[in-house]
Length: 224
Image (cartoon, rainbow, N blue to C red; front, side, top):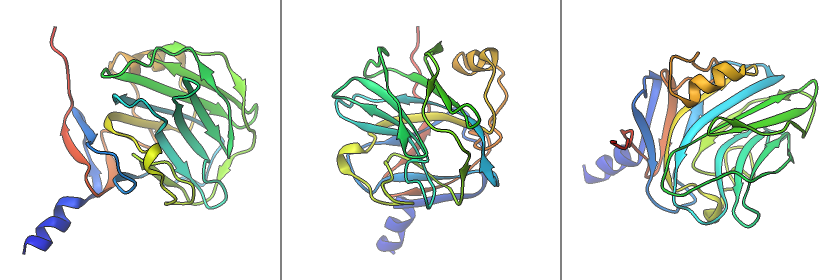
């Protein structure tokens, strides 16, 4: 019985969509196993996208913020913090670009949104509601079976995790769209107003599987 209880504790899933409004995933320790696998709505390909999330960490090293892999591209869509160069790096189809100058302070919530269009190949970062310049990273649609993971960076489809690239902290409000959000919709997300939920990933109706020690808790808020 204790063994069964341990399995229940370390592996949990929501086979049917679960409303995570007001909740957060807590990644409480450095590990190369703890992760959350997110199940998107059925998609044949991604020719445009917006991915938004909020995160809270005190890490002073490299770490992954969002990882989507396909069989042909382990970094089909990766949002990564490079501590050495103090930059956020969006990767698309195994190509990357860099954004410097973000005020990525520890121990506070940050909203990070990334947009990309396959026709132009242009990517743009919105950090706490402030847009970056648009940069070329990669053109051509993202195709194939997707594996979406929070907490780890995939070097292979669903694996190849590195302890020193894992995320430690809290994450919430993960949404993904198969189109580019307008600036007004982006600001509504940042301000946590009545924005349009993601049609690929929707925090209010999320299918997911927790592997190892990741907790679902009430979202940490500060009182003023």
